Image: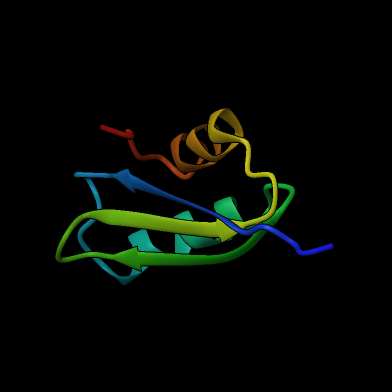
Length: 70
């Protein structure tokens, strides 16, 4: 039986600095199933990898960090 890994990418236009990266990473890492969070400040994107990811929970975590998901 093989494990499947999900990957989701979100556009988060309000991010611009290291504090943004840290805030979003900390909140998204709390979501069940998340294994990695990659924040690309230049592209204003957040890529999330994990198992059985919950899109609504990830969006809520990004918003809890203070950013809107486009």
